Image (cartoon, rainbow, N blue to C red):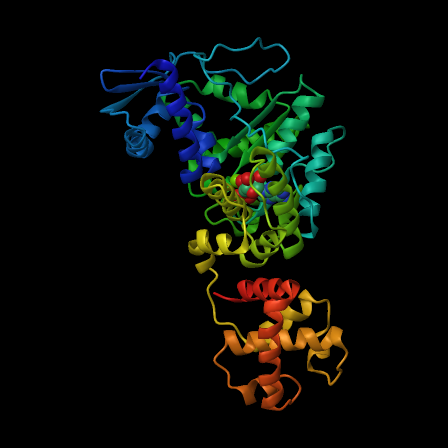
Length: 452
Ligand code: ADP
Ligand code: MG
């Protein structure tokens, strides 16, 4: 294999790693690596610091070796080369910095994901406040809330919003020095500065920025000397009126092992949470991501019902939702088929199983009413208008096929109807499924939504 195909192969391995270890870990550890070459069974990488090299060696070497092997490249070990440690990287000055040679120390800011922009962020009720606050901070001007503290569960868009702020500032005020990094990296750099007796430039670097963004602050909980340093950095910046943006997986009050003085400082600013996504937001996100995927895979058709199905069935974590869609497109383009409900159910069964549960008649009634834009009381009422009777029959049919309830029990649950009415409904829906594709699709969609 020549050098070019080694690079290609490393590109594919990176893609694999990104999917398997997650975007954050990927950005922290794998993204900064540059493959220098493969010789005599050793893959050599350049890496910003020895510390990072050691970390990757300890944590990811096995996975990387394994993936090389899967590519048909036998490698005995990895080697990492860091630039000389004496020169600590200076805070990034975008405007004055000529294009850096790849072998130079990485800029202080962690790499930003180019897809994490405001444009790509879908806004809904659960995240609108966090989004608005982030926009406001990105606009700059008078600092109205400092720090901005974003918190919320995994995969709800904290990192996306922080990167979006950084992208926006880089585009509109390139001279501003924006430093984005995870709390973990803050800690590593701090430890490294201690080790290399380089505290002076560490402090200099952190205190000369215009905006500091620290992602996943919960990582420094319990790390006392790091917390001290963070506290001092924090205060120094706030005193100079510099903006700080912090994220964490819970509110300042809930981060265990966080010093009290940090906790209270964090509450000076604006604390906003990203709520778990709701159905509308999930559907909006899926539409946006499907559009992007469709551009990249023009030959793959997609049944829109699949998006509704996923929005219903996959819970709040957007990363999981994205992963599901990516997998469907990859699978569909591989086998040269369109994405259908069947395919979604088959190829995502592991994800869907996580939301396994017993279906109840109440749930069926709720979903059917929702689907047909009716009230549940309509389904239970004696009304016989077709717009109500059809959905009611569908709901009865689903109750029969998805629960273990008897016909009389089902009848009772539908406004005290007789079991013969239920039998009739089941027969009717079975017939209609053969002749009316709309009904067949509705039933199928509802069934898949309800079914484990
Ligand atoms: P967190 O940092 O909160 O764990 P991320 O910001 O890494 O979550 O988001 C996880 C994934 O979901 C990312 O790929 C991100 O782009 C995507 N994502 C999350 N929320 C949204 C949203 N509202 N619109 C578009 N993509 C989103
Ligand atoms: Mg994150």
